[in-house]
Image (cartoon, rainbow, N blue to C red; front, side, top):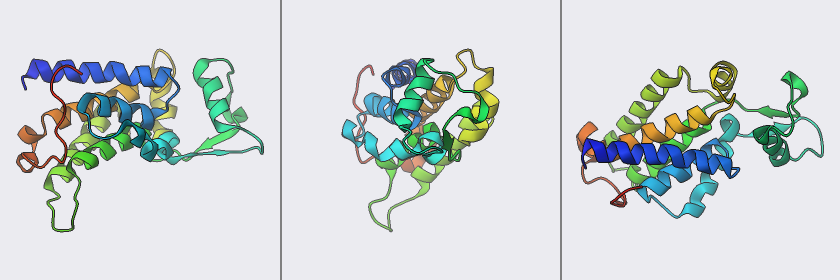
Amino acid sequence: MTEAEVESRVRAAGRRVLEFRQRGFHCSESVFQAINDALDITDPAMVRIVTGFHGGGGIHRTQPGIDIASVLREQRSGERRYRGDEVPLVRVGHLCGALAAGIVCIGLLYGRRSPDDDLNCVDELCYKLHRRFFQESHGRECQFLRENYVPMTPKQNCETIYRKATEITVELLLTSSRLVPECSGARTRTPKAGPA
């Protein structure tokens, strides 16, 4: 695959992740689906495996009877604005869900099936993903990114983070055999050919 083809598929996945966000999927779900669309990793219904990563590992409601999905939908749409501690939800705030979804996709393609399988490919790709994500967004934790990075973005949301995680992961996966020799022939599924 040429550099131009890689770049084209990376950018297409970056656009696609924002489409999933607009449809109401959260960070981990949007990133997983965009990467899966670009590389045809698994059944799209497997998005369920990453749902709990949004909000840095889940969200807790601080008032009985609150519907988490409704509050998040109101915030996303701008229908309702909360200030500070008015939000009746608490995010766990640990590992960014967009980053976690990228790690899951790497594992789905290169993860082990037995204890004797090689770890070099999956571990090196995950390391590279963490490193690049940190270099480009200056953090890895949801809470830090929401407090420090999101306020600097034009739309005051995590769209830029969704895109970064998706594009970095797709690029790493499309160039994996060049980046990590042990990745050559290690894939359990082959990404589909052609434009994403």
